[in-house]
Length: 451
Image 1 (cartoon, rainbow, N blue to C red):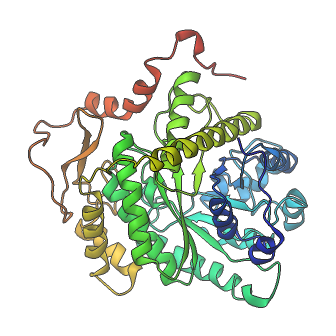
Image 2 (cartoon, rainbow, N blue to C red):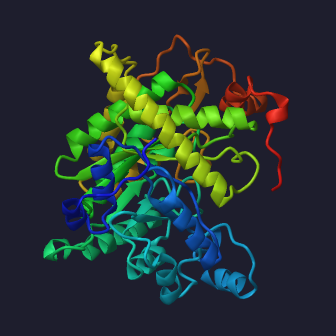
């Protein structure tokens, strides 16, 4: 297990507090960066969580996850929660003063430990402004991925909000060449995590790349592209390799990396099952050359995890990644093995090209693509979504299209699901990963719902 990662003085001078540069430096040293989802209303507890993350026996970056009130712009409710000392499900960065947040970060956020703000908002301007004023220049989201699954806002408005946010971030980094300690703003697309589950990989890859291109259009040059672990490890391997290939082709002048998310859907209810699923996410990241991993804990199916559970997940994922890297190097030395190709790259490229050909302004193109059904997220109920596409899990555990709606991608008619999807079919698909990883877990290993 890697005990620590300390950038060299030359790296520190080059990176300042740059999130992207830190990840690139760790990757060059052969180390996977691991990251928790962590956010607390209380500033003291938030600081304790960041301190524990920084002290963990792994290469980690910090997370400041924002609360739900702030995410939807209800700052008055967030301030009232602070006044009444009520727990929130994240850190209310806009409601807390700049002095308070800077005190949380004092001595923590630096070249050896960048901190990312995670928020889930289709109206992120206030959040990003508050983050920048506190010295934080890394965040995540996107005009599609933080609108369709989470927001009642129109897609048009989300696109405008995110264009303004990208420009704000880009302008904050205009002085990056002024000397040591300067930062380069970083933005991660959440596009590879649409709804978390039951979205075939070609569409996840396409949305991730399209949002990255949107960020690039509005001035960002340090970007990460996301992909959420799905139902079949071989299919995930192919998808992430397709994502990396497309990023290399379409973002040649950009500092970019790929971030893998441990499964976003119904998580295993046993400790053993949850651990095995996290292990598989770490192995996926290493096998595909991905640079960063967002972890989940063994209590994920039951409650918000504690700081200690997050640290345990970080260290476990890092240890598995280290072992997988050594095994992979040995396998490569023996010739390795051929990679499967089921057409994920070709379908994703077709979706991306279709959207880009609609308009020179990618924001306009994205809105038009959803209006025409040329992008269509299965099971997504947002009014901007055509709601014609459908997916299913085949007998091998792969996510497939049963109906691509109006999207211009080929669908193999052979495995087509002819009967109408019932509610029980849908629930079975949602719980597929949970059941698969729990099936060997002993009953005594089940996680309690309290504590």
